[in-house]
Amino acid sequence: MALSQRLEIRQGQALVMTPQLMQAIKLLQLSSLDLSAYVEAELEKNPLLERADAEPSNDVPENEAPASDREFADGEPDSSDWMGESLDVSRDSIEQRLDTSLENVFPSELPDQPARASTNELPAVSEWANVGSGGRDGDDFGLESFAAAEISLRDHLSEQMALALTSPVDRLIGAHLIDMVDEAGYISGELAPIAEKLGAEAAHVERVLSVLQTLDPAGVCARNLAECLELQLRDRNRFDPAMAVLIANLELIAKRDYAQLRKLCGVDDEDIAEMVGEIRQLNPKPGHAFGSTLVQPVIPDVLVRPAQDGSWQVELNNDTLPKVLLNQSYFAQVSKGVLKPGEKAYLSECMQNGTWLVRALDQRARTILKVATEIVRQQDGFFALGVQHLRPLSLRVIADAIGMHESTVSRVTANKYMATTRGIFELKYFFTSSIASADGGDAHSAEAVRFRIKNLIDGEGVSDILSDDTIVTRLRDAGIDIARRTVAKYREAMRIPSSVQRRRDKQALGQAFGRTA
Image (cartoon, rainbow, N blue to C red):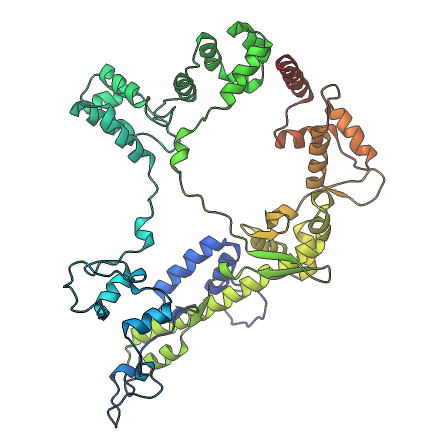
């Protein structure tokens, strides 16, 4: 078999991931906050991009001077200028127009100003400016200057430490310990490394810490939850031997093992119910009263409102859409000049990237609106009647309805939120698996089934605790074919204890309330 070389021309179709296509896919799955950060970075890199909501320039054309600098042929101001009007600025005239004495409007005598020769003489313009600005000697301050700044936990503790500790060494150790307090008010770590780092004895650091633990708020500077609760109980003068045992066995409170707690504390049902209720009234994170890490609120990307005709109006949230324009005039102006080959390539690249960014942002907005509109159409029962009417929905159903690929719908629904009359929901919330109907009818949404399970458990009484098998029976009577293990999985996902634990909790609470009553 002879081997030879030859040229062939073949025609075929292939999907090429160009940088522009990769950029469009990346923008599609970004959240509104990530998109804003990305656009800000592009605005800094690309000189041809600018914000669409930028304020117009206030430049005055060179051939037109400001109105205050114009000269008129007759030497008089223009008749349209309000300054040309004849104004009566006498004291009597102003008091008549204001319907009050001038002393009630302006101070009779400004500080550091010479006395006026006549009581009928008005303040100078510069004096009025000082009064109107609210400042003296050119200082500008307003109401915001007097607004109290939010004090931090560290500043609050430092101010108290200055009074509680007098020794410079103690203050140095106390300042170091305060710097270690986290946002919840706890000190993490052992005291031995701190003492070694400061060159002090561990007992000395312990004494300073005990002083800091008496500061406000109660429970601050604790090293664990038990110590935090103990400090708050001591502040209320409620830390007795029984409370000490209860604090040492917090895991039994979490398990609701009140029988074991009664044995350990040596008290009856009434006392243990009162003690547990007192523990639950304490603040496990006292430092949060002074603020914590800034939590970024969820900003909806889509707004859904009821229309007058009974349908639903779906629109994009304009506040989350970055408005970017391509400055064509600046590009044309720069292109007219003499440019080097490297400068021409850079300018062309900026023009191309800017064009693709504007198109990608527009395409992203259109795609989100299209997907959101179809979701509202598919889940109209949820918007009208509630979560119990949420239908099972998959990405493929939406993709087939709008003529897009399933992966595109998945990217659109990631990190996007919809504001409705029932609250703010992530777009992926509306995609739930289906549970077959017992009578062969329409399938039920998994989220709607969870809602039914929660309602059944919330409505049970002390003597009528529903087991998982009973819940399965009641759901099948309602036309929902579901397995027992699925009910248990949904119940655990909603953090609902088992029927045995619920019966034990309600009996203990019923006995406690019956004794206290």
